[in-house]
Structures are given as C-alpha cells and as structure tokens.
Length: 103
Image 1 (cartoon, one colour):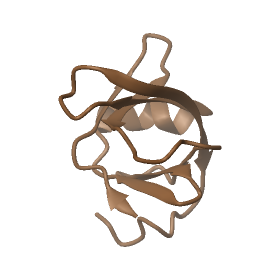
Image 2: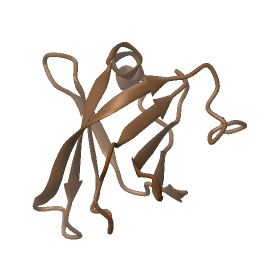
Image 3: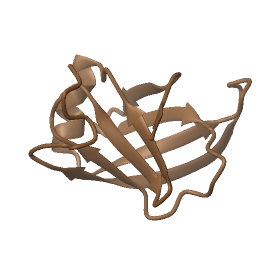
C-alpha cells in the first residue's frame, strides 16, 4: 500500500466526492474506496494497487459517508492535465483494517 502524498478531494454541488490523485502506473479495474467514517480511506485502484488517502478534510467526510460512489481523476506529474477519470464504489465498513491505529 502506498500513501497518496499529493491528493485533493472536493465535492460537486450534487454532493459527489471527487478525488484528484497522481496518475497510477497500472490500469484501474473494479476500483473501490473503503471507508470507515474516520479520517482516512483506502482506495483500491485494482487488486494490486492500493492507496492510503489520509487526513481527509472534515468538511468532505460527511459527503463520503453518505455517498455510494465517488469520482477519481488521475493527473499527470505536472498537474496540468487529467489522464484518467473513473467512478469508484464507496464501501462503508465498521472498521478498516488498513487504517486501524491511524489517528
């Protein structure tokens, strides 16, 4: 699992969470965002590429908790172009074992 070092998250006016992350090396397949309602989430881009999205902004966490899906935009290194965009299912769990112990 890698930490997403430089990510942004905003919500649309409809309340859909949108994550902007650095471009991954592999193709996203059946992507899922695992969320336990806390300050961190885990993005499974595919079975072998997992990102920790830590310290989610308080103002966005409520939208993530209420949504069933989110949008992910993957940007290039310069940050001036979107290379991939896709929808991810948000799976809410009572306890996320991958973020267990993070404050």
